[in-house]
Image 1 (cartoon, rainbow, N blue to C red):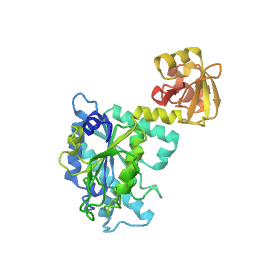
Image 2: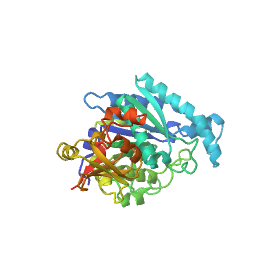
Image 3: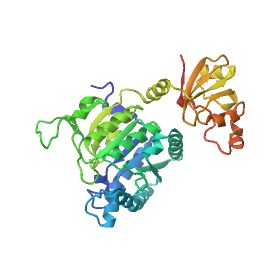
Image 4: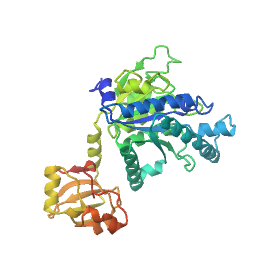
Length: 381
């Protein structure tokens, strides 16, 4: 049993990542399913506009390669990387156009965002992608995300967009990841081979028993199996996001989930998202550098829980890049806090004792007004 009921987890989610698989988007490879995409867009619009929720929705959609195969007249998914990339390039045009059209019909603005795992592995590119997505959400634009299959190589693999959905959930610190698939959810065994298999309504994300239950690939189009979804849920739980695996063609599936209805399999994250992020920062053993701050900044960090502004910095130690974890120390060298640096060490040295308003003049741009944002900081004991 989990500590939180399925209805609580779903109703309380305010930032939701929805991932839809290729077999659903393309109706098992027969080209983009306009009616189905339109229906999910209708539901997403209602979720985003539900009074009093301030809910933010992000879509991660497969389907570019499958749509490209259809447009190119290929009956079988190719094995050569260059052919997969070509199919993705052709199909991405139709996929983006379809979502833009259907979301516009619902009065929503949309944006296409193409990512690779390399974008999310590099700390600076990670923060840039995060800032872009959060800015889109701030302006009430619904991002439609897909992997940039036209340029990746080994990243084109089984279940990749399940993993991408989890990485996006980590990236924007989502409350919930919804994986819509062509299966009802997770069973204790393959129900097609074992009539005694029981449906798993809810469990704890990361439980190794779930991986033993999961079977192989379920579709010749998407190639993703239940195991990739279980592993995606485990990854999403690392930042505190719970995951629901549900049948994408269930009527009003997204709306009913948001109402707390018991649909699909809920895998609850054992740690809340704020705690997960703070723990990740606190657990860094190797710090790239340090920011020495004045007594006024120390007092504000400890008593008011504010962000660290450049004007409070007196000295920069070490060499670090944007996105690295650095220590924040007082004049005596004692660690006050640690967090993610919004600027490199070279840039930080130029910003010491300067008000945030001067950042664009000093650097030629401004990533953030803070050197370390309070959401990316943990106070030392």
